Image (tube, rainbow, N blue to C red; front, top):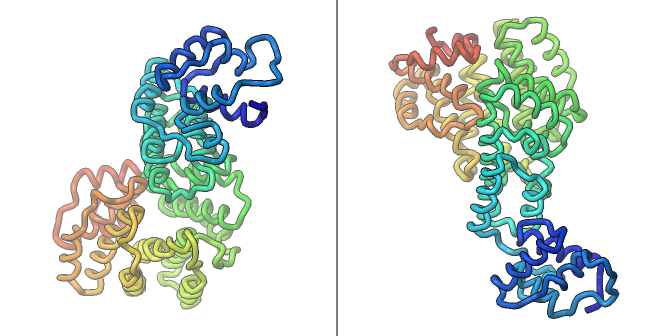
Length: 441
């Protein structure tokens, strides 16, 4: 068969991927020959494989025969070599292969990044593919494999042309963030490495906003992210969270600094709905604490921003988040009537129960409704919706934070605040939030 360097190199990669080892010597060729026969029932001699991998010490212009190329392609899961070249489906990753790879890394107590990359690049991205990706992520955390985790967001085959709301990626990144919480030294190292990486910025920093530990630790991650912020959205994403941290800790000078920076921006439809809501939240709680009320100009800004939200594409699917985060901010600012208006608009949206990433927010909606209904004098409605709330489904990145709101709703409806909630408030430094929510500490 006429030799084509590009096609030959592609087949080499696929063969090594299926074999699980890089071929560098005669023993490797002999082992591969046996493996090919075992899987296909067809024989390719180790000498032929040495020629194929350029280990024979001689150059053969004619290359391998077509039948040899077809056997190698069948070993990789294709019907024949031409199917691979014509863009036939990549082979599926088997459960057996996943178990073998995981066991290999467990035994070595180290994950081979290149090997993992090769698997993710060359197998089809079905359920087994993402199961492997998730298991490798968990194993890297268990092993505290610093080298692999530093390079984690260079696993481009996983993230290329994907959004962070892709189901498997979403849950794996949330798991990664939660599992890293207790690893303070490792987190610091990883934040510094990840912060300049555009993939890590999108898939980790912008997705896993750890509200549970924002005041104690996660603000350091946001500060690292801010060091490389370039767009208005990136700057506002950082500044609003750092303002919130400073506000809750009564760091007056810092809060004032971030508030001034936030106020310099005009929000349009180029800003993510959650970031837009955080900008408004910052302004609402700042004005309420400073002046005792919110201005008509700020209310007008709320409605202007609401009308400017992008309703199209993936980001358009997330406009509902604007209302969730806006309601949260208005409750903290104790602006219950306006919060009620926002919650009514959110309740009327047809998409609030349509996707897995809304599950935690749907429970937040019920929690916010319970608080707002009570303060608007709708006591029975408050009690009924509180009883329907399932706090175990809150988001993993804000589970404890959201339970402070749940505890406030419960307290308004006659329930005692548990010692656990009080302890968490103090450990996570959310005493000021508890006071604003009416929780007794």
